[in-house]
Image 1 (cartoon, helix red, strand yellow):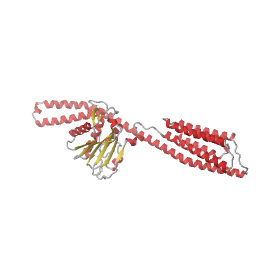
Image 2 (image 1 turned 90 degrees about the vertical axis):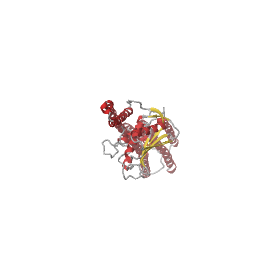
Image 3 (image 1 turned 120 degrees about the horizontal axis):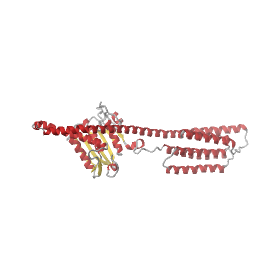
Image 4 (image 1 turned 60 degrees about the vertical axis):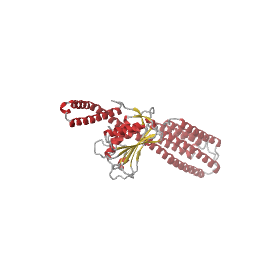
Length: 460
C-alpha cells in the first residue's frame, strides 16, 4: 500500500499565500522525459559551427575588401571569391543536412571543423601562406575541437592544422606588396597580428561560452536521468518487497478467515450477540486486509482478481468515492463532478490506489471535511483533492516528489507522494500541490485522457 502521500509535516503556520509548487512531466520531458529525451547537444553545437562559418564568410569579405582597397595589396580575388562561394555552399548544405539527419555525432563535428580548416588553409595559401598573420585562426579551430570532440578526434585536428601550417611555409602564393621599407612591412605584420588576436579572442569568448552552455545543459539532463533511474530502482525494490509481503500475508489471512468462520458457527459464541457483532467487525476488517493485499498484487502484475476494467469517467469517480467512503469515513468526503460529457476509459488499479492514498492522508490531516473534485481541462482529466487542514509547509512544497519528504517521524515516511508522482508520470500526467487561499491544502492530479481512454495506451 502506498504510504504517507499527504504530507503530515504541514506547518501549522504555513501561509495560505504560499506559492504552489508544481512538478510536471512537461518540465521533466527534457530532464526525465518518458521516453528519454534525445541528447541534442551535438545538434546545437553543429548549429554554432554553422553560425561561426557565416561569421567567417563575412569576416573574409570585409578583410579582403580592406586589404585590396585600403592597403592597396593585390589579391587573387577570383580564387578567394571561389573559396568564399564554396564556404557558402557548404553552409547551406550543412543546414539542410542537419535538419534532415536524426543524430549528429562527434565525427560529424570533426568533419565540419576539418572542412573549416581546409577553407582557412586555402585562403592563407592565396594570401602569403605562413607569413600571413591570420594563421593564428588555426588556434580557434583547435580550441573549438578541444571543447567539442573526444581525445582521438582532437589530435586528428591538431595533426591537420599543424600539417597545413607547415605546408604553407613551403607552398603558397606570395603577396604582391606595394613598394615599402622593411619597417613598414613589419608594422603591417604587427597590425595584422593584432587584428587576428582580437578576432580570435572575440570568437572564442562568444562561441566557447555558448558551447559550454550547451554542454552544461547536457550534463543537467544526464544528471536528471541518473536521478530518475535511481528513483525507479528504488520503486522496483519497494515493489518487490510489497509483493513478497502480500504473498506472505496470504496464508495467515486465510487461516484467520477460517477461524472466524468456525467461531461464528460455535453454539457457545452464537448465543452472545455482542460476540457475534465483534466477529462480524473482524470479518469486515479481514475482508479489507484481503482487498489491500489484492491491490498490491494487482499493481505488481500478479492479480488475484481483476485489475484494469472498462468503465467511464463518471462511474470511475463515483465508484472511487463510494468504495473509499464505505471503508474509511462515510460523511467526510464530498464529491464535485464537473467533468461534463461522459467518456469511456480504463479503470487502472494503480491509479485508483494513488487516489485512495491521497484521500487517506487528506483524512488524516482534515478528519471533518474532504472534497474530491473531477473536471476536464482540454484533453485531460483533472482530479483535485482538497482539505481544510493546516496546509503544506514550504519545505514540503519545495521537495515535492522526493522520497522521505515527511516529518511524521515514522521510518520510511514520505514515500507515498514519491510513489504517486512516479505513477502519475508513468501515465503521462502531472502532480501539483498548493495551499488553498481559504485554508487547507489541495493536491491536483492531471491525466491525459488519451492514456486512460480504451485503446489509448497502457494505463499501467
